[in-house]
Image (cartoon, rainbow, N blue to C red; front, side):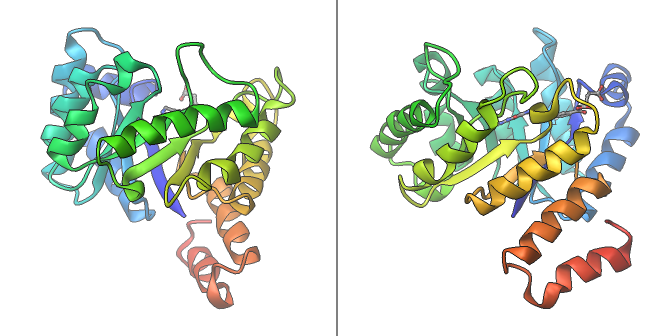
Length: 262
Ligand code: THG
């Protein structure tokens, strides 16, 4: 399973503070801990700070890349911020994200090709977020055809069918789960998702997140954006991998327990 560590995000108070003070220490600690926890990518999001977002992204990416050897996932709605971040990455980067809206994908396709990145494609179009599995698939298919037309290989495409709170929209989690095999039928593409939105507004969020992730893995999801230092969610996905026969003799699960990471 592909893990994208979510902790370097300006929505978290310690990260916001470190960005304001340009204090590298909290950032590097978060980067090292998440890398050690076995993430393939670190999501890097410096919040919506207007003109400052581009400079903040440059500082964040440079700070991390100078001391931690890991792939970054550059998270911003602004293509200029994304290009700045990606251009500074030493290893293959992941762009987070494009949508099926022309204003979002058009400026980023040349960036994907120039820097040989992967990209996360959200199933959103001009009409907004889809409700059903079929609508999610239809948007993914339209974007897939555009990306293929531009020569982007399947392996570099990560679809995110967008999880929504089950508390306010009780059918949404199931629609997302049903969309996973449909989207994967497009080709050798990946499906990933953020996790924590599913439990928004509920108690025992960890239980909701874990069950959602386990079912999603069974449905064919390839990875998730999550907190890799959270022992509960880590134990759940490692248990799910063992149950699904993807962890020979449960060695990963046992080792994670011995290391104290679950
Ligand atoms: N898909 C894609 N990108 C994403 C998301 C997604 N990027 C942002 C987000 N969702 C994933 N990242 C985070 C980062 C931090 C937190 C949650 C998701 C976080 N949440 C605290 C919580 O849930 O309790 C609240 C914040 C706080 O106050 O600390 O920390 O879905 N492609």
